[in-house]
Structures are given as C-alpha cells and as structure tokens.
Length: 504
Ligand SMILES: Nc1ncnc2c1ncn2[C@@H]1O[C@H](COP(=O)(O)OP(=O)(O)OP(=O)(O)O)[C@@H](O)[C@H]1O
Ligand SMILES: [Mg+2]
Image (cartoon, rainbow, N blue to C red; front, top):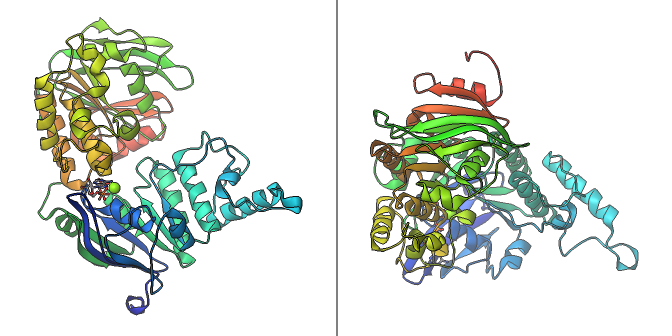
C-alpha cells in the first residue's frame, strides 16, 4: 500500500467553482496516482464535468488548485492544460473531419522536413508507432470523417500520447460505444496505466467503473463524499453515498392487459441498413428493440418516425398509413420519439430550459392546433419536476445543465406531448442510477395509461425488466421475438450475436 504515501501525479486540492448562484463544485479534493485508473461518480449535476473542465483548463477554479507532481499549476486555457500533460477525452470528440487521422493527431505541430515542408512520411510513421503502442489498427491516411466515435476517441488518445500526456481524463467516454469498443478502450487505458499514466474515468455504468478502476471518488451536490480503493467498496455502498439514501436500481414494468394495436410496422426495408422489419405494439405494451450497437435499431426508429426514408414496407398508427419521410405526419398521428443522440437532435442549447421543454422545435405545428399553449407548458414543467431535473431557473439556457439533466429535459418535452406511441431510444443513457428507476416507473405508468411504448436499449437488465416482448435485431433484421417469459440474458445475447437455432 506504499502508494498511499507517494506524491500523486495530480491532485485536485480544495477546488470550488460557481456559475452565478449555482455552486457546481465546493471544496473538492482527491489525488490521482500514476499507474491507476480513478473513477469519479455522482448523480446528474453532482459536478463531475465541472471538475473535468477545470482539469482541461476550460474553467478556472474560484478557489483551490490543481497540483501536478507537487507543484501548483494555474491551468489558464486548454493549451496550458495540454502543456501540463493533461489530456481530456470527451464523449463526442471534435476532430477535423476533412483532415486525415495523422493530421488530426499532429494538428498545428506537424513534423517538418527540408525547406520547412510538412514531412508527411514522418507524420504517418509516427502515427503508426502511436497506434502500435495502443495496440489498435487505424489507417493514418484516411480522413477523420466517417470514423466511429470509438475510433475518434482513439485518435484523441493517440494525440494525447504524442503530447506526452501523463493524465488522461475521460468524461463518459463509453456512452455511445458497443461492448467490444468499450473493451478496446479499457485495454488502451490499462496499457497507459501500466506505463505510469493516471486515468480519471467518469461513467454512470458501475460494471465499467468496477472493472477498470482501482480507486473511486464519490461526489454529491458539488461536494466531495469519499475516496476509497475500489476493492473495499460494493455497488450498494457507492450508490448510497451518491444518492444519500437506498435506491432500487430497477423498476419492473407493471402488468397491463394490452389494448388495441396502435403501431404496426410491416416489411420495412431500407437498402443496406435494415430489411423486412415487422412488428406491432398494443396500447399498454412495452416492446423492446434489443441488439448490439450498430444492429440497425436506431435506424428503424428514425424510419418509423419519418426522419429517414425507407424503400419498402409501411407504418400504420391506429390503422392509418403514415406517409414516408414525414415526421410532422408522425407527430400528428401521435408518435413521439426521444432520440438516442439527445444533445444534437433534441435540444437548442442557447434556449432556455422552459422553451426547450415546451416543444419549441415543433412550433410550426402549434399553428395547426396540434401542440403548444399553456397546457403543454404546465405539463412540461410538471415532467421536469417528476424527472428530477436539477436546474437553477427555468429561464437558464439548457446548455448550462449537466449532461444527464439535458437528457431529462428531452424526455420531459416528449412525455409532455401526451403521445399514443412513445419511442424511446436508450431512455436512461447518461442518467444516474438514482433517477433510472424513476424513468422506468414513468414508462411503466405511461403504458398503464394506454400508451404503446417502443424502447431501444442496450442495457439488458432494462430490457428484461421493462419489456413485454423483446425484438432482437442482428445486422438489420429481426433475429428473434421473445415473450417476457422467454427473454433472458442468454436468449437475447444469443440472438443478438447472430447465432441460429434454439437458445440454450
Ligand atoms: N456553464 C454553466 N453555467 C451555469 N451552470 C452550469 C454550467 N456548467 C455546469 N453548470 C451547473 O453545475 C452543476 C454541475 O454540473 P456538471 O456538468 O458538472 O454535472 P455532472 O456531475 O457532470 O452531471 P452529469 O452526470 O449529468 O453529466 C449543474 O447544476 C449544472 O447545471
Ligand atoms: Mg457530466
């Protein structure tokens, strides 16, 4: 245990940060040791990303300091943080899409050859060397455009390596990754730890935290609660410290006698994306679309809602066929979709929480008497409350909310429309464990009130706990339809990975 006494690579020492009246972080301290992955956990709005932004030089602490190898460092600006050896990997990296992978790694500091020209060969060779060190295969010459989020993160990590970063900070990096990609990211993080780097890892998924990290810090309401070796902790202990009370982590769906068929999808195909998708959902039912990331679930949802077109098949709501590629018609027919990528597709960051929660994006529809008015506003307020959205004032820009609270605003906005069909894509992604069961309870309640619910989810416990029926997608097709009783972790995974025959 000698490490306890060694000088930490980095120390967050008594830092505080307020935004107006909101004290986001108050007097928080914890050490990051070289060779260790350190988890930072807490409810939505606890202050985790604010800590990250102080490490990244984006925000300056109001009080306290970031101490690097025993030395206080003012990190005035991202360049200063970079120079100090701190690299931050965000959930959605920001590469330059038209530049090559290698150019992104060496942006602004390309190796120069004779006559001061950029030495492309040297740059490429160095990129290959970095990827080798990370144990990944990526073509340094390809443009960044079209890379998966997982690969974009690896490019960012390669860049961090080339800058000799000693501290790697990852803020919910796994939210949009598949299982295989998470494992690859963890292998890279472990390799960096083995080389003596320190990793700070933020996630709402406890299985990940417990598999990657050796030490764990809990924050609650902007304050420090505890820092302990992970080996000394149980999930229940961590949750209690985060939330300050015992919580049930799952809320199984109530049994409901299903009503009439509300949503019918028939032979839906989109060339190269999905084919022959057929299912129906009755009032009161929750039907889950399970499968691995990339199986085509979100694409099906987008087509049903009319965001994307399809080549064949049809979608009917209460027996009425919907026109292809017309979201307005889907909304008018009573479909609401909570998208997977809520930050980009669901919110206008500069607008107030209230306006976002009251359907601003569908304003044109209000003219036809479909939406808008005081009733929706009241209802949106009520939903933000029920979802425990943590905010200062409703008039604040939605962009000032923590990531998880932004997610909740999008949920609230769609729930407030009183839909007949509710399609939720990854309903609890980015949402903390304390509110998760609440989201499940709300979905169950909506179903009981006669809403037909379609839920896309990668979280098996959520699928098994909530769904009346599970449609498992594999490579753009429905590989299996399982009733509540047949759906188990094994049977779903079996179908999701494309294995045929009876599930063992
Ligand atoms: N730029 C800002 N302006 C005003 N308030 C802010 C700003 N950034 C963060 N906050 C507030 O600070 C608090 C902490 O937010 P932070 O993003 O650090 O939470 P978090 O722990 O990362 O949560 P999540 O798990 O939801 O991502 C929240 O109440 C948030 O609304
Ligand atoms: Mg955050």
